[in-house]
Length: 459
Image (cartoon, rainbow, N blue to C red):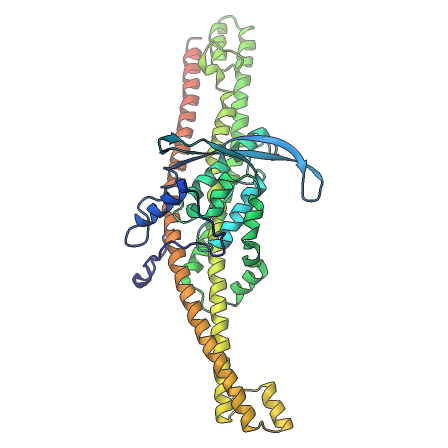
């Protein structure tokens, strides 16, 4: 979707923000020096010349998955899957190679990392995690989250998540992310000490802001509508693909019966027997003398390959929610700004009424004054002084919120533009590869029936 570009005066990109409240300790030298170098290499508009600078220094992979049994927080036994994360420096330090670091993480720890990133980087379209349980699958693929095939696909998805974060110009610099990759013990305690849970916005507060904000930014409103449409379209596409896969599976498996039928028919036909037998060889899934005999069984591999492309679509299905998270944060900031402006206007009006002695609106204080008498000049002066102090504080607060809002919009829109380029590139590549695979599959089918036709013509 093409969004209207931000106002030219608001396109200046600030220096990459450091998250507030992080532990004071810096990154290890192998990472810290590269971070500072990347900041210095940034172009004049605040964007980096090489967004994947960290990936050029450190290799990240989720190399294997392992089924384990342990006890959860409720001291109940549970079965879960752990994933082995390996990181390795691709350069040498002081002439010596850095050893590979490896550690095991559960899916819930990946979720904890992402929740932390969502809170500390609200202006960033945080990459999504792969699905926890399989959806939109064809009937031969298990939806069990402990199924080996599903676990393998999720392993690939988790690795892709880490690579997305590591290649992001802002997220890759985060200390908690680095510790997630390198510190196996006490990592949860470290991320919880940041207090990110206390900074998380509640769903109720976000819903309230959505309905009560008076002046929403049109660009973010359109972006939210686009994310809803993106999710709807991809969901429908995945459902259609699953239905087509089920039907295709049935069609391919029927071909396995052709060979058996033609072979049995050839036994009772004297003149056509040789032709039928030859045609049967081309379609009989049990024959290994001809490569085309495997046509019927090839559908299992084909649909498993299709699932790879489906997972790429699912990533952007979940990216839609990440876009909405940025929009919700902007609505919350806009709502707080409007509430601060409204409160400031109310205090200014109260101060003016006290100074002039004219009450223009009904208030409980005004009714009390009429019932119990006017305030003394000293009391009125004291109230005016308090209100003036509150007005000064309110003006400073409103100015701060305005600056914060403009900064958020600049950062958020820059990251949204980066996301749009990534999305267009990824989806184009995935859909082209999917089309090529379908063409190849159809060519194999044409070849099977072409060979069968030659056999039939010899009868």
